[in-house]
Image 1 (spheres, rainbow, N blue to C red):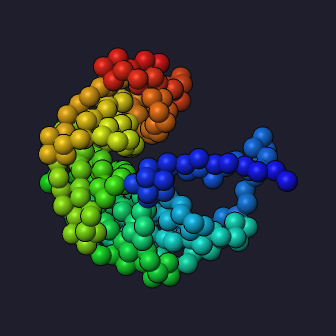
Image 2: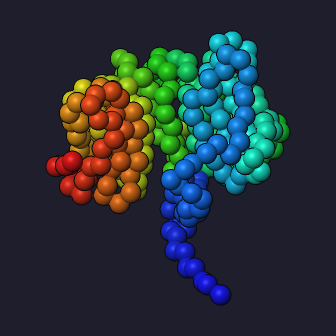
Length: 264
């Protein structure tokens, strides 16, 4: 008999809604292959997903705004996934993060950017709140942590980063914001620090101190030479995994032990 011990930070897992992973690695990773797939229909392009307990939550943007843009896919049997439920929120959705029985999505619209969807019943997702940000720009990305969501938007005349209290999911309340001066394409939050992948040409990575949501402040930044803006970011410990757009290289590992002097 072989015994395996797994250690996990339960508080961290609960705070993010389960995004810290920890399921282990199985299968032949040298030769990955498609296990199953679903089709959202003609003219519908998927934009983001989140997975919880065998269910996959998909957002999309369609050529026809009357089409569904939020899908719940039952993937318990990975060889035969199927759309269990869907709904239309409006102009299309760019990103989603699921925590508990709620999906927090951002809309490809200059109003009602934050959408809160009750997914307790996978076959009948229900929009329970639609909140507009004080900027007429599209919502691009969203990250949930500890009853707050962090929202990034396209570049505009005002702030492109927002901290929103969702302790009452039916009544999201903006706690604070920060003017990045560029589009915020991805967000990863650890503790009191928010790591942003931005479209800025000299600050593709920006780190914000969000310990006081009412007074968000820049804690560090990094200029990733040779890329055309940041596209994605993931943080583990003091290592930042950064994806860039275009250029000679597009994947970077950064040492953020010292936020005032982030290094490659």
